[in-house]
Length: 274
Image (cartoon, rainbow, N blue to C red; front, side, top):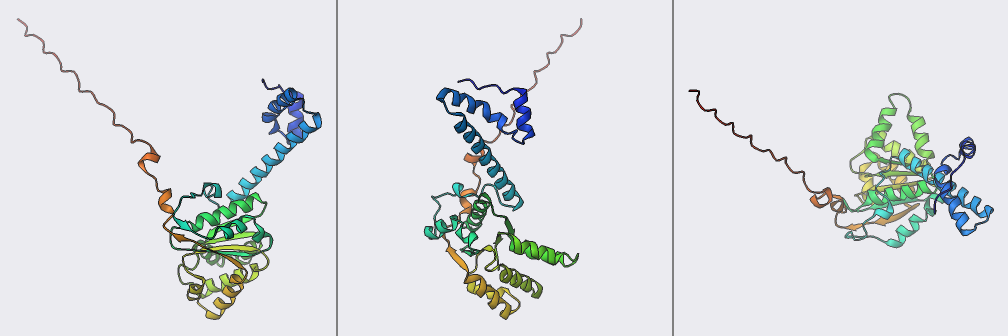
């Protein structure tokens, strides 16, 4: 089955309508339609559906890049043979993205290396594919950025941006004690996003230990109570997942061989001149 050839006029018209990407797939679709006797209306629907899906995929990739999501941390790449345990019913519910639609939060808890960041990022990718705006950041990086924003008077704009995004993923929260200003920042972020937008928080510490990270106990109790009572809990236990991502000789391929250097040929001595 040889593909059809598009005329220059048709190519120009597709480009003018911003459908230039169809030029690569349309000839094959037309040839297949000829072979199967597909009606024109079905062919047109098939071609336009291809373009819709391509645009959705492109938009999702763009949103994931803008969100700073690691491209390899997607759910289909999760190693199901990993020695970790969690409630798969909770993960299945989160993958439906109903928690984003309902502005619910998620707390992903567990020891170091069990895959908390991986699963949080995977949920971010799903949300990007679902058309939601996502932002991923480590907690220490966010606090540092908020601290810097006070110096150039951009804090209010940054906080408004953080509160408006559909899904905010805050990684490695409560690892270190926060200053008074940082505690106020987190309090404002939790309070203003609760019931308005979704937040995913990963942490090595249980939520009961988050209180100690705040400078103000009253602010901590108010912020954590609001956040926790609107959140799904996904607790992961088991061995470190990172060991499965560790490079090995087999994965990296054989080491390069050193070039073989041949010794120079010995120079022949000339016979003495008589």
